[in-house]
Amino acid sequence: MRLRILKDGSWELARMRDVEFYFLRQIRSAADSGDCDGARKRLFPESATAAGETTEGVSEDGTRDWRELVVPELTELFRDAVSRVEEDLEGVEIEEGKGGGRTYRLRIPAEHAEQWYSALNQGRLVLAERFNLPMSEADFVGGNDIMDERWLAFAQSNVYAFIQSFLLETVMESPG
Amino acid sequence: MTATTETVVTPDVETDEDVDLETPWQVIVYDDPVNLMGYVTFVFRRIFGYSEEKATRLMLEVHETGKSVVWTGSRERAELYVQQLHSHQLQATMSRCD
Image 1: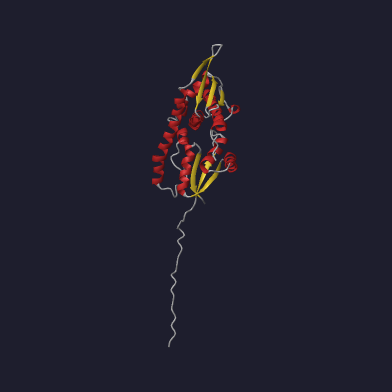
Image 2: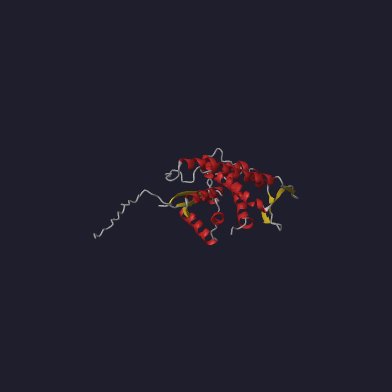
């Protein structure tokens, strides 16, 4: 996979292999924390104060407001980011290789970068919770073939992190 | 003529130790193994307007010690900052300053 920024400010994912494009198409399921309690709590904290801390100074109304107002806003924000990635993926170009293989190319507007970053981050957070993923290959214990679900999740997370690093260093505008 | 003195009564003012006048709140960010360090710095600059140096210093404190107090001030503003940090998928809470 090759990432680069283009002259008009947009950015490009090129030479994507089948598996890398597959990982991107799986962004919605990767980012879905629905059946993973730890991931859901991680993405959608139900309070501004730490769980287990006394809520001195924070009324029950305040906690309820947080749950009823802030959590739905976060849900919508994160869902919109995933939808943005899915919409952009529809513009993919398929390039047939000489040897019969094929790769994928995608051009994305610069202004979509932060939503891509958010969606990929959601995916990594949920995958990490769901599969108890380590942060480095050296710490990975278990099967390392394509038939191993946990290994696939680890590879998927690494692809997402690779794109995120590019976006952060090259595309996303530095504040201030 | 008889001189008169005016007596001034000073009320005995007791201070109420339970009165809490604007105890500041602090915003705490916690380390997590997923968020990229550069992103944490980016978010601190974006949300709090910190310089690159200050944002990096706070990020390193989060990374090396597990957490950092990144802002102190009013409760209302602390709630807003925690919400913004959550929207950037950072782990954050608020608590009263001791």
